[in-house]
Length: 159
Length: 159
Image 1 (cartoon, rainbow over the protein chains, first blue to last red):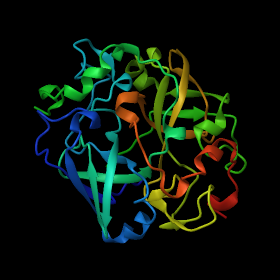
Image 2: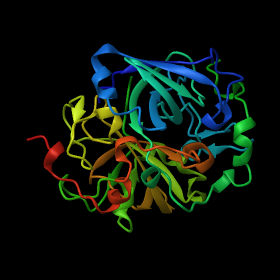
Image 3: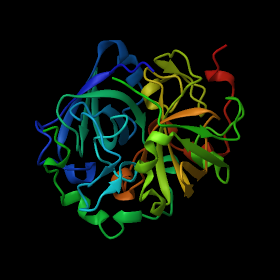
Image 4: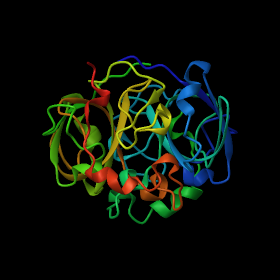
C-alpha cells in the first residue's frame, strides 16, 4: 500500500516527552497544518465543519511491542486496547477543532500532535457516525477523566 | 512508510454498491475480523471496550479526485470535507461495536465495511478523546440524520 503525506502538522510540541497524550489534554493549544500544493483543492467546503479527524503517521515511533504500559496505566495491556504511538502500523488519529483555512494553511486547536508530523488524511468529524451513544471503557474505566491532565513520559521514546 | 495489514475484515457486503455508507447505516449488521497470528497478543484487554475504531485500507478504491460528489450530496465537494473512499491515501476509519473476542477472531457489529478489507489498526473508542461536546457540520448540516438510511451507489466504483 502506497502512503504519501498530504501535508505537515506544525505544533508547539517539539519533543515527545511532556506533551498531552490526547487532544483533550491539548485544549487551547493551537497549530497549523501546511497542506502540500497538489492537495489544496481537496480542502474546499471543509471550513464549515468545527471538528476534523486527522490521520497521521507517528513519525518518531520506531518499532512496537504487542503488550505495552500505556500512559494511563502501569499494567501491561494489549497494544490494540491502547492509543500508544508505537504500534504495528504507526498510524495516529486525532479529532481537533478547526479554526480557519487560508489557502493551504489549516489552523487547528486542541492538539496532542508532535511538531513536524506527516499528515495522511483529513476527514470531517460527524457525530452521528463517529460517536456511539452508549459505550463501555474497559481498562480505562474510571481513568478516562484524567486523560486531559496526563502528560507523556519516556515510555514510548526510542532510547 | 511501511504499511502491513494486521488482519482481514469479513462482512456480508460483497460489493461496493448498495451497502451502508457509514456504521450507523449498518446497525445490527455483524462481521468478524480475522487478526493474523503474529498480532493476537495485541488484542489483550480490548474486550472490555464496547466500541473500537478500525483503521483500514479502502482496497477497492483506485485513484481519486480532489472534488467529489459525496453520497449525501449532488454538489462537488472537496474530498477532505467528505468521507468518500477514493482519497489521496485510501485509509478508512469506522467506529464499530465490539461483541466478543475469541483468540484471533474479533466479532463486530454496526458495520459499513466491504468484505475482505485489509485491517491496519484497532484502537479503543474513548468518548472523552474522540468525541467533542459541541460541533458544526458544514455542508452536511440537516443531512446527517439521513446517513443511516443512505446506501452507496456507483459513484465511487472503478469503472
